Structure formats: C-alpha cells, structure tokens
Image (cartoon, rainbow, N blue to C red; front, side, top):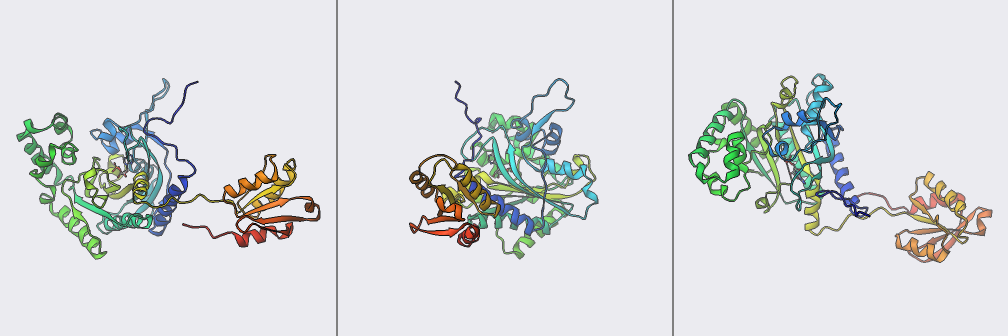
Amino acid sequence: MPSFRAPRGTRDLLPAERPGWARLERLAAELAARYGYREIETPLFEQSDVFERGVGETTDIVEKELFRLAPRAEDRETWALRPEATAGIVRAFIQHGMQTWPQPVKLTLTGPMFRYDRPQAGRYRQFWQWDVEAIGDAGPAVDAELVELGLRFYRDAGLPDVDVLLNSIGDPACRPAYVAELTAYYRSIADELPELERRRLETNPLRLLDSKEPAMGNINLDAPKITDRLCGPCAEHFAAVRAHLDALGISYRIEPALVRGLDYYTRTAFEFYRRGAEGQQQALGGGGRYDGLVELLGGRPTPGIGFALGLDRVILALEETGRPPVPEPRPIAIVCGADPAATAERLRVATELRAAGLPVRAELGRRKLGRQLEAAVKEGARFAVILGDELAAGEVQLRDLHAASQRPVALADLAALLHRKTPPTGG
Ligand code: AMP
C-alpha cells in the first residue's frame, strides 16, 4: 500500500489545534462586525486572468506561485486557486454592481489561500488569511482605521508587541518617474546586482527594493526613496494618513522600501511585524490601497484599501510566546449504562439531552460500565449519566466524576440540572 501524506506545504489541523484557530476566526468575525465589515465568500478558484491582471503578471505570486488548474479539452477558460482574496472580492464587487450600494462597501472574508511557495516554517502552500476590504473610500481616514483594526486583532489575539511599517508608493501620476529614476540607479550599478535582480530590473524594478538577497541591503540603502518623490496629492494623502494615526495614538515606522509584491497597490502600503522580528522577512500581515484595481478588472474607477492578516503566522507566534493552547470543548456528560447491550436506551437519553442543547456523548459501544466510566473521566466529562433498572421508573444515576459522588435524578429534571452545571462558554 502507498503511504499517503498531506501534500507538501499543507497541513492537517487536528482536533487539538482547531480550537486555537476557531478562536482567531471568531475574533476576526467579531471585530469585522464591530467595525462595520460585512461577510462575503468568493470561490476558492477564479479565472486565472483575475489574478494575472489583479495581482500582476510580473509578481512572484503570479509568475511562480499560482496554482493553476489543468484545463480539460472542453474548457474555454483557465482557472487558478486563489493566492489572495482581494482580486476575487473586487471581481465580485464589479459582477454584483456593488458600486450602486451605499459606499464604501466594507467586506471581510476568512479562508484558505494557495501559493506554490517553497515550504518552510510560516510559509505554506495552503494558508489562512483574514481579509478586510473597504471599497469606495479614497481615504485617508479609512487607511488609519484599517491599521488600527489590524493592531487590535493582534492585541486581542494575544500579541501586543506588533510594529506597523508604513509607506506610500505613490500613484500613476508620480510613480512612473520614480520607477524610471530607480531603474536608472540600478542600471548604473548593474554589475553589482545579483543575477535574479538584474532580470527583475527589466520587468518589475520596484521588487528589487524588497529583495531578500543579502547583497541588496547596501545597494538599497542608497536607492532613491519614493517618499521623497511623491506628487502633491500623494504627499498630502500620506501626511493625512499619518495625522490620523497620530490622532489615534498609533506609532508606526516609515519604511520607504516597503513596496509589497502586488502591482495594483497605490499610495498607502503597510505591514505588521512582531517587534524585533522584521529581519526574518516574515510579516504577520499587510495591506494597502489599490485605487486602480476596480478599473483594471473592468469596473468603474473606484478607490479601495484592504489588508490580509495571515492566521498561520499568528498561531506560530502565539506558540512561540508560550501561550497555552485553547482547550477543546468537552461534553458535560457521558450517558453510560450497567447493561452493555442497552445501546438503544443510551442513545435515546443522549438524544433527548442533545435536543435540550447539551453537549453529551453516548456510550454506544458494548464495554462494561467500569470501562465506560474510565473513558468518561479521560474525556474530561463532568458527569456520567448511568442508566439502570430505575430507568423504568423514570430515574437515572447521576455521577459527579469530579467529586466521585452519585445520586438518583428524575429523568425529567436531568436536562435542567445539567444546564445549571454547564460552565459558560467563551474564550
Ligand atoms: P501577502 O498578500 O503576501 O502580503 O500576505 C499577507 C499575509 O499572508 C502575510 O503577511 C502572511 O501572514 C500571510 N502569508 C502570505 N503567504 C503565506 C504563506 N505562503 N504561508 C503562510 N502565510 C502566508
């Protein structure tokens, strides 16, 4: 037999891990609702074009990392798994005429994304993002709102020490001149550039700024900075974003080399890092403004801004800080019985308790009562409901597994009693 394994770069999230993820998903959903973002789901795959245009053909994400689905002979379209959420959400915005909805349209989505990346810690081929988009608002206040929302998520998740890196990457009015100047700078020192970067220079020179090649460190120190070359309106917008962040008491570091990998970004770009971990090149999350994207995908010109926070990296960071795992929910009671064969009775009583809203497990096997109770204790249940001869008279034995005490209880009172003993859920 072959020994099958999850594909390279993917993971099973096992029952013991899922509660930690569920906690983050709940937090994301709760914060999104609190800030007025409405939930949307888009397909896990789209026409490849949505990403080729919407993310950019010269980005790593499209050039190297797109999971393309093999087309069948009869297909007239080609598809790819979504590497990020923004392009699909903007496609949906246009398709459903959301430009006629009250603006801005604030949308949120949490789910898996797919990139054919080289797997390593914190870098997977299937990973999860919490994504938030505000479409139809040119800013600058909403830019600051998003940065604040991201920081609140990290803080409430248990990561208070998160730094914000902030930049403006200009717009079509000022970026071309800057890119030309940057290209000229790199060309003037072309023989010092690593091979990969020399090639990239011809397709997407901005990418050289966030190059991971060590040799680029000093070269980039002397590179012209976009923040010195913004046009009037971009400079004004950037100053206003900073003023709004200042008004919220949020500190940030301006990072002129922060250009992010995606072509559609304009003006505000930001990334979140664990304090002191910037050197690892692993952002916890990032976002930015994409005022050109709706038009690029076929809609009317509409500004927009959003962020994507990677949940995998938050889980990793929480583990590294030694935070105890979120416990799995436990049944309040296990329905056991003295007669191993009486599975129908146990199932019926458990079904009644479940219908009353109680998390209970029924012992549906045929092991002896002693074994049933041992299993109940191992599972962390508080009570065992033990069915015996008294059932005919409408009574069961309720065993408190913590106190190791036992007493008869009328079946009619059992659900109410267990409800009173059920700890409130949360956390
Ligand atoms: P990006 O769209 O590349 O800026 O990604 C936004 C966030 O998603 C990053 O900051 C990471 O937290 C997360 N992320 C991106 N790619 C991966 C990956 N391959 N594995 C895990 N998380 C990722």
